[in-house]
Amino acid sequence: MNNKNISRLLIVFFVLLSIGFFALVIPMIMDSERKKPVLPIIGNDQNHHVQAFQFVNQDGHAVTEKDIAGKICVVEYFFASCKGMCPKMNSNMKLIYDKYKSNDKVLILSHTVDPEKDSAAALKLYASQFSADSKHWLFLTGDKKQLYEMARYSYLINAEQDTTGLSPDKDFIHDKHFVLVDTKGRIRGFYDGLDQVSVNKLITDIAILLIEK
Image (tube, rainbow, N blue to C red; front, side, top):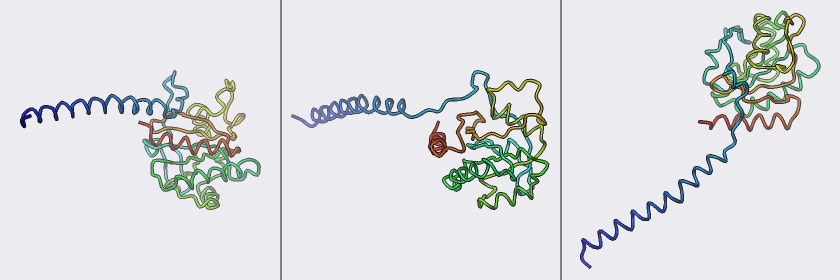
């Protein structure tokens, strides 16, 4: 057999080998993609996204929706003088903070429900209990009406309740749930901030969003 025939046979062999490889591997890759966990997009039928806002963090700096653009956010509502569920919630939130505090794509937003008492200085003192760096864990205060509207209408906290005609003075948010928001400002999950299993799921779900295309 001359060299030309040998070369042709080798070419045919490698072509067939390549076809067989792709026929085997591509379906495996596609199947693997299909099996990846996917988080729901909540409120997507209404194309729901977090609205514009402006609050003040524990350092006294203004924070707007532009500062969280492209970041995965974990959102909660609390108040610094709370002696009930807030300490437990924020102890659990610190587990999330400790897990992702070195990741610039993850941000925690803790909003006060008592802005009259929770000044930036008060929140700074409160944040120090958790060694919270404001680069990754923001404690936010500001206009009471806007804090309320963000909770109800952006983060959908207690959205299943009929709040028609209610005002922030009569119906402010004090809820145990953490809200997971993706890099596009969409709600991807609600979690019981008092329940360790639910908090662990939130930690896992953040990891899912970090690799989501």
